[in-house]
Length: 283
Image (cartoon, rainbow, N blue to C red; front, side):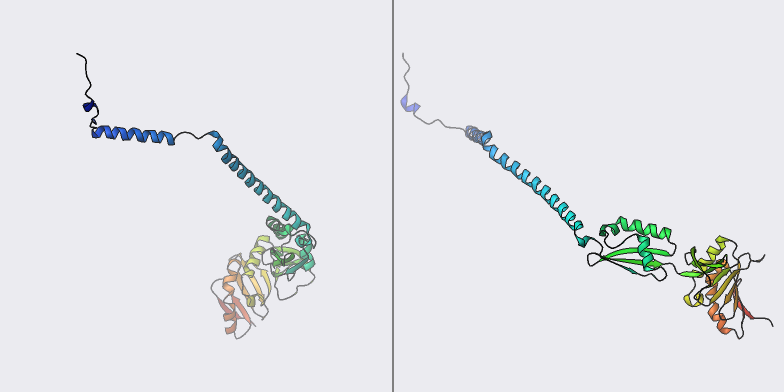
């Protein structure tokens, strides 16, 4: 007996379970995702790659042009008169002549400003202070674009040292300069009887520590050692008094001299070797 299809039954909708619905939706999502992930054709990327390459090229070109312009500006600046020293002014010098300062630095008008800039200025300063004992410091400053000011700091004169019929100048740095005088000038002491260069150097440094009023009151300093005090010095004052002191403690002890001298009724000796006391000259 042939099989007959029941049309009514076949037209009925078959019920779908929740699990089947979930699987159907998941398949639809995967299909949609695959469509979105399809690689774009290389032809669509070419314009963007060309644009990026063009931008990089322009950036490099702009950097090169900027460097070239900076070099050109510097070259143009150093070629103009404004980059060369038009005037030199020396300040701070009292003993060293202005012409000598210009000569010792080796800088003159017309030179490039670069000659006294940065490390070049330090090199010049080191050379000058090493060669000229009188110069303690030297510095350079540019004003009004190309006007140079040279500032000098000098070591002050600390006295005179007898030498072969002349007097050589002692500086407060403890150095005996090559400067010579026929006679002592100013209110500076004479250092005499110092047979040791080291002792003389110490004595000058001690003198440099004194107050200005005490410095100008000293006429002569002699090295006068004894068995009990191998560092004894004998000082002659301009007010007529004499002082005995120890070299290494001279500056500290001489601070008491003005008050001691003010109490003295007659001219005499102030002893600062051990303690501090005074007594008049014997008749």
